[in-house]
Image (cartoon, rainbow, N blue to C red; front, top):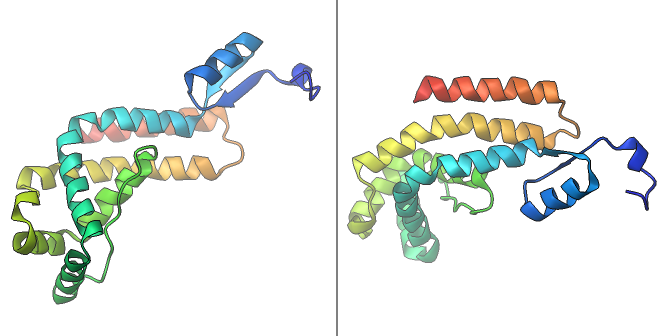
Length: 178
């Protein structure tokens, strides 16, 4: 900050929550404000932990379709037969929780075709009713977090008042659904 001559103009620094960055900022004596979108990401990743058994099964199914062109072809055929429209399944990226929402939402959109294809090709990988129930319950909860993360990540500046307002919305959203 001294090098850029901004030390006198800086009261707080906003970053992700990485320990080494937090420690470096603490050493400056400045106020550290964790990035809101990154904090949502950490919160949701922790909240997804109880769903890990279902998520592992979902990832196995996605991986099966990604690795097998025959399975992809069968899925497309099934989607056409069920007049669902052709949708490719999406794999999540562990460092981006929003991709978990995308993966679950896409799986739900292709649910009937996936169930039918798995019944023909790999019944042992098929999700049971409990797994589908978990996905169907989790997706609407995750959608709000997804929308808020996308919205706040696109903004150049998000005021603290807006963060507080959005936290209240998220809190009420979760309370109403669990």
